[in-house]
Image 1 (cartoon, rainbow, N blue to C red):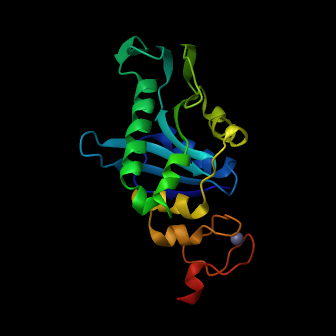
Image 2: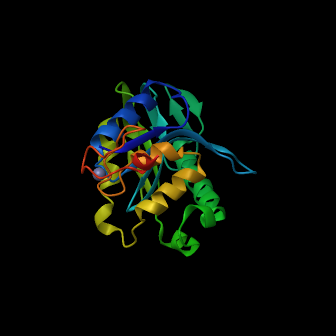
Length: 218
Ligand SMILES: [Zn+2]
């Protein structure tokens, strides 16, 4: 089970369902942040969900659109015949902005800021509404730009990556990145550094491995 830290309100049921699924389906070693803003001075972006794992950083754009969807990598999409700005491009843009924000704050996020260069960043567009018809969504994907055509595909799209990843982010660096986006320290302290079990805030001992958590001293 992943450690989930909600930093804002869900915008819709699709975001809530995606967060709940990721929390339960991803293994312990993943950290999930939901609903926060990257305060880039030029283009602040709202991130629906961010998954931090040893294999990389996954920036997830969630669309809770029911009905007929039609779209490609470029140009506008159609949603039940109405034009919508391209959510695939939005996901890729969000990844770029979040990556450059972390780069700018690499000194705070990483034990050694050069480790930033070893971090893989991925975008994921997730179409999570159970009533969505995605048969006319035709996307060219690459290693960094991923697509989950249904909610159930989302955990797999993330976990696929571990094997091909050369670089690994440490627990401390994952917590550092989360702190840059405002994750509270008591939440991070509850995420066991030894076995990554997602304990409740304020727990003195890890329910996974029994190790003392940071508050036990307080
Ligand atoms: Zn533990």
